[in-house]
Image (cartoon, rainbow, N blue to C red; front, side):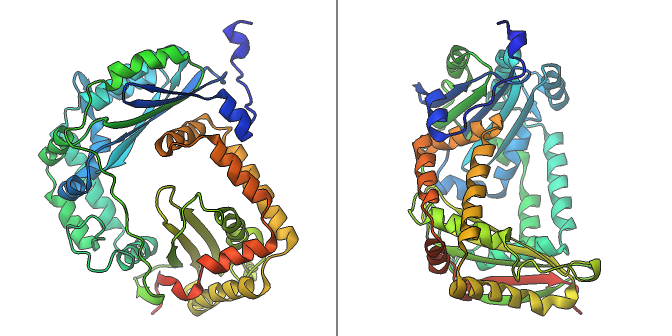
Length: 439
């Protein structure tokens, strides 16, 4: 069959064992390489690259300048202006994005099989030959300042900034890595950055001392293997890499109300942190509990809408670190300011409901099925699959880790889900912030 007959792509078996059977894991020099060649619609290829660099000292020293590095990398390199790079990528039907901070970069490249070599050449230029144009930096700096200032009285921005300040480590001072600045402090920090600060950080810290590369789609593995030395060879960081370990902070529960002018809707945010890593046996049970808590049931968090206008729309999000015993729950609601006092009461009511009444068998079965379906469905996206393989390379995992989680998920009972919820999520520990026009 010719390549034309394969252009529609293939549907992967998304079970962990089947996916693992398709993966190629290799080491090319200092780069951890993970490949999953497959037929794709339009011969597409998805690539993800992660570079770790620096240490706590360099993160502290670079400060606000680090946030400008990812965007500046795509705004000028040797022989390529931002517009020329954009035009070249469009010509070969490719997209390239770079994100990151003071400790690393993540690159995502989407292209076509026939254009993969050229796309990799453009990526090398972006990573290895940046020019840091002053005009581009000035534009980014002004945009950053404008965006920050525009959020000064936006309820969601105000609430999240307040939470970040409450949850920073006790005794943290300005200049510390985990210090959370006020808006005025952040504006001052951003204004103080010069393009030379960014270029100096690149020259003195950035490199591929710890690199992972994943590729999913329609490609020849040898094409990628041969490109790695050109892409990342001799791109060493001048400093020894040391991962920064975040502090798990558990401040006392509190309620704060912040007034901002002229807002039709108010917001409620609540957060609590708890010590749990994603490989803990409790994770599957907590996942089920949070799936139900976050919207799989008719609860105090999601009441009927009165008179055609909802008073409250609430959502819950949870996350556990893959490296540290660091988990958090964040709940969010948009509501009519007139019912402010009811919002916090509704949250407490839902916690008490679960603590005393637990979950039904049907709720748990539905949540388990939904979680499994979501996990499997995510792998239908090659870009998501590439990101997952990148994470596995970072943590030294395979799809066996996913298989273990699925097995634990299938064994979760209502009692186990309730016990995990009560163990990790104490409503007395919630830090609640409500922002809106209340007066």
